[in-house]
Length: 438
Image: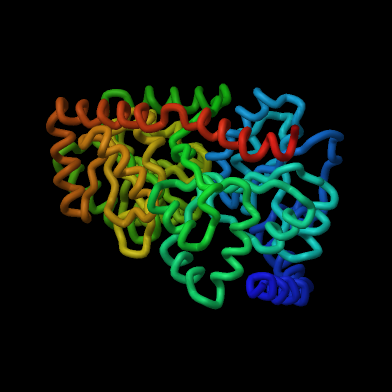
């Protein structure tokens, strides 16, 4: 009863602030943070017609979660061709990348904001038979609205951050969170520790099942243009020592470029590829390096590395997986300072890179642990600039060690990623599709 009371308060509050939310959305559109033409989809207003027949809705907040959903969507499309599949994401940056990765018959919309008018309009128009949510999107109006309409709910790659778990466990919020989790037919947590968190938040134990981490699975077909671009870069870098620092957060570039300068003393022709987490940061990095007199190539300017280029800055989204093919060594950022929580290391491992990361890796600690269990050589964690310097010096000076780490990463990836999509499909088929579609 307390959970329902808290939800009614939440619904009333979100209804009352709807006009302000609308104004905020318009402001975000002006700033370029929302799609210039399709921003109204965030208010539950569709931009395409709904086909007849059963419809399955996949939702992911941002780019990483959206990419993780794509292999599941493709599998569902193969085994349930009669289904219409709707995909939604929240961020504009995710939209720009994922729209080119989805099969052409998948409907792609922006997710409605969690205000009653938007959610009610969205559910009334699309009438999904089931909703598959990726990771941690627990929006009360969405979940309670789905339950009211008898729509089956699943949470894949489910996780709760430490901060959210502490907040949600408090007496004030726990009844509401418990109510929301009770509406799911299936929760598939990332790890056993995440499963414990969901049980402590009073999710019914019977709906918690394991499949493996979807972020291990990579099923993309590169365009001919992408392939040609990467092949051209590979030819230009042939014969030069290369390493890459990916998903770099603000401040971490100082660590990576400090290491780069040390390595240049050892290998003057070395090329460091910098891939910042946010593209605008890449332009700032390139500008600062040019001020110092360094020869820098910037991806968005279509600049290619010349013999004097020592730093290549990739200030784009959605190309990281292709760039891992250019380097034998990948240092995964978002992990070198307290307060950061790591990034996906499996893409680098899948490409056969020697994988290094810092110690501030959040829920990715489960991925690192799994790969370590498969092969301790598969991932190397370093504490900061000095340890990273020493590790890279050793890898560049010992070809056998470098090859051993590359092979270990690739084999650990293969061992840990095997069978995940089949496991997810079996769980969805048993807990969701038989209930909602048959």
